Length: 298
Image (cartoon, rainbow, N blue to C red; front, side, top):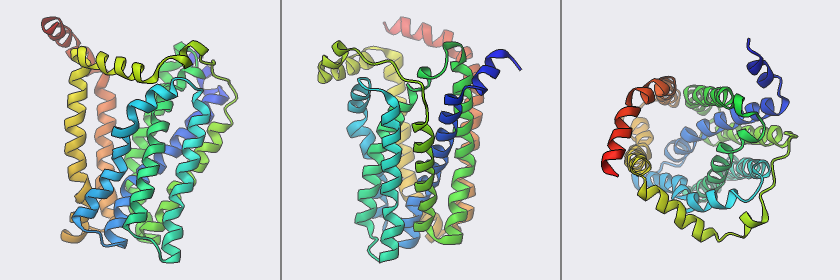
């Protein structure tokens, strides 16, 4: 084993981030299927209600995504990561507690999904730029590889776990697993000792709206970036349209059990893993073509 890998594996802060990130990813994947299962199987939601639930989960990314990126850039990431996961864990406890007390309904589910979505936006944005703060530049590739492996594993195993938990303890109480996983993640990330570099006062004093405008201008004027945005928009819109009602259709019309549905969703993770493994080769293959196209457009 190379010295770089050994150094990374013996880095206590990286291990804490890795464990925290793994716990968070498993929790996220369980909730990804768990929340629609609560609506479809426990509350008997209609297609319209399933669509509204999907909107509540993903609307925060549209509403707060750009603002979160600019705001987080002014502060250390670790406290944001800890707070986001603590609040996600606490909010998700509302689902099983509401089920126990008999007050769980779609309105409660909408509110929980929306506020958890806000926390997820801030966690995801802060998380992507946190790794360079605790590992050296030479270890970034290896560190990102390990984190992506955990993510892909969670995408494969998480939905199956969610479906199995629903079969054993019903969907609302399966959400307890997600809540606990976020608390575990917050605990491990909070134990990271290395301090991040403090953002300069000049940076803090810059106008946030001006930075957002500059960021949008950069995206719109860079053909490659604008192409990625358009592709991502079409994919996410199409995926969420299907995903919003798929659980309802599969469970009520096709009579597919939650455990089998979890396995079906888990196969999506295999695709993500294959994509991650092939990404570097595909990039090398198409980079000359993309560079030529950008030059022509420019």
